[in-house]
Figure 1 (cartoon, rainbow, N blue to C red):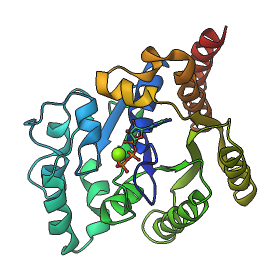
Figure 2: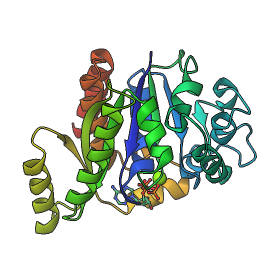
Figure 3: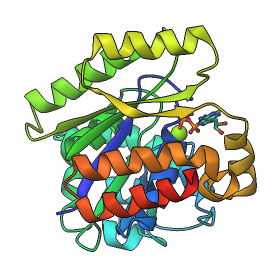
Figure 4: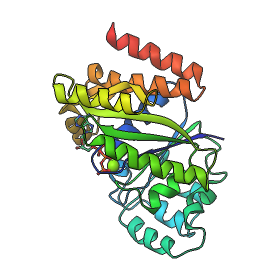
Length: 262
Ligand SMILES: Nc1ncnc2c1ncn2[C@@H]1O[C@H](COP(=O)(O)OP(=O)(O)OP(=O)(O)O)[C@@H](O)[C@H]1O
Ligand SMILES: [Mg+2]
């Protein structure tokens, strides 16, 4: 079975979607086959991957049982749009609502090594579905003091999923995003996070830069737009690939990272 990684956070704008799309790119460069699933009614991930707005079926159709997951894969993406908000409401009234995604994804990801799930900016039913369907959870948090609380809340939801519906769920850790390491605040926030969650804040830290907004505007991966910044995500991808036991891919990605730094 593919490694299924849910990327979540308790609040908005922590870099989840940027992390999913750039990790997808980095893992692919490492030779892994990656499926990206948009679980946010905002559909940002789908836009970024240039899925046509009228692509059908979407993840909403899959969740309510109108289409099999395999039919909703468009160029290695299962897209979302505003219909997902309706689907979430419909799900909320059903028995086994937390298990829906896990069920519909069964057998759907056989051709992939990694599935990345881009969660919406809250810890509601869609995020819980992602955590129940996932093998691994990855928290995205900003390099800010208030992130401490957000990580704590995300962790509680992960623990709930583990305790009840998905005992095999593993926490990969938290990736610190949007770090301005020139400021004391940012550096201290990263230190505080590491102190609070020893061994669980990933080594790779994603630096803050306006280049991320430019890269999504132009639809060009940060790995190509600004390789000297994108190397942060290569480091993250290498670290995660190693944690997943994908050593060949990790070695290839580390090689790419070394190439950028040379
Ligand atoms: N490392 C970074 N430095 C600066 N800006 C960034 C960085 N990563 C992402 N951004 C910008 O921050 C905004 C939010 O990023 P993104 O959409 O990835 O976050 P998100 O957690 O998915 O948001 P939402 O919770 O709304 O889904 C975007 O405009 C993006 O371009
Ligand atoms: Mg997002």
